Length: 150
Image 1 (cartoon, helix red, strand yellow):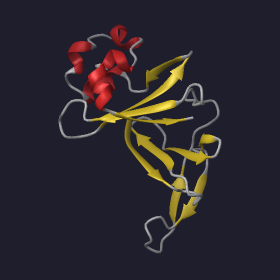
Image 2 (cartoon, one colour):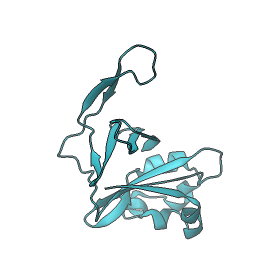
Image 3 (tube, helix red, strand yellow):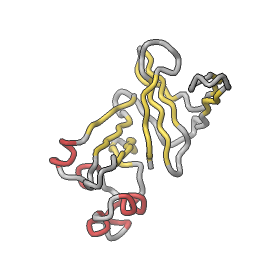
Image 4 (cartoon, one colour):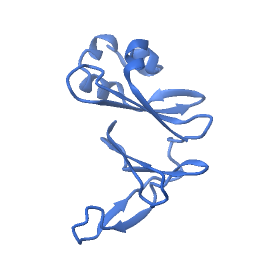
């Protein structure tokens, strides 16, 4: 599950790149190019990111055999809002599988983060085919911010 996302111009090309991290997932870096976002997670760079005079490692490691893919036709999306009104942002990363966009978060992770979902998704079967519109109301999704990477 994505726990944080940051926009930063890592390669100094004037376009903000997307960096994601989370539980049970690798650090993921999406470089913003004129052709769209490209996964640069299998790269390594060294820079003084925090200007303390010490080199900082920018590292990622995801292979080409990952199930996580993003294209212009089937983009990765990140919905984020305080869905449970507890004062903290709840990010939900989505990827396409067989032409349908599913949340990357597992049922157990969802139920842990948003406690009221335990009543809605009482079984793994109930959650197996759930998409964002099954999990959240149109009103909730309308209040959420959404980012996409291709």
